[in-house]
Length: 435
Image (cartoon, rainbow, N blue to C red):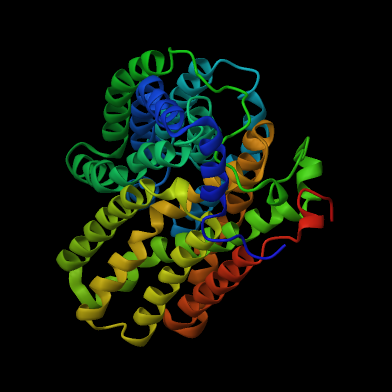
């Protein structure tokens, strides 16, 4: 099978809608948002909480735990890697729970577990406590992050699923703008333990009612096959039945492998971004650059969200990853130029949020509905296993070469490979078939 045409899924949708009538299509899309907007709002709020404490909070934990306990960078960094790896392992079984457990129970339980883990990490005074709390945090992350949000919204949205997921995951971008800076400021005054405990309990008080009421309405499309799909010849007819079948599927790996490479390069750069920018920009301008990058991620996700259901998601993802590679190349060539660094950070940021959103839309259009949760969970787990170690790889290459040129070049190489893989999906006879 050649690369999917730019509007293959849109063409197929139009054909369906021509048969059903444009009025029916408009009514169906409007009905989805009328029934599903409370779920989008609830997932948006959950994303702020989850990414605030589970992703953007990690650098804050690192710095404050080192200062408070005198622990080495290696020890705290190892706990963060353990958190991501353990969370990835949990994703393999959490995705199964979404078909067996009430959404409200699962998500409310997940955010409570995540709050418990964050409080435990912040209050850790012994390495054993730190790693045990990181494991609890990993369970909460698996039950509430992108797989959970995408699977939840799939119950309400079909034709506008990409837009719904994109809007909900904007909460992740806002977490980087608000939650992490707030944690830094509160920790400077009250200490990390009191700050995380107080802020997490306050957010839970707001979030739990939102989840209970936002997910209370009946989902209109719980098990239906999606309408807005790629043409039948490009879509896996049955899809993997379990994780073993998925691991043997070329179709699964044509999605999971490039996203793992893209996630690794993205997280590797983001975790070292401050150290890279500080020598050239200073602390104040670095803070401005980080804020600009976070707002770019928010804007990029909103902009793509309105067209994401009408474009070729593979091509869009390849272009997004390619734009990040271009930004890194500019940083490699002009590492000390503020005139280059600011636009490069913004260009890189434009695709940060979309790289989290796009796997769900590709999976929706290329796999049957009953396989969505399984494939989504395994794709995210594969990416998380990979990017859990990549910040350390970037650090090691930096130390061996004495600068960030070589590790950034490694990130660019991974991004180029990822883009090529996305543009070369498996041939028709291999779609959904074992290797």
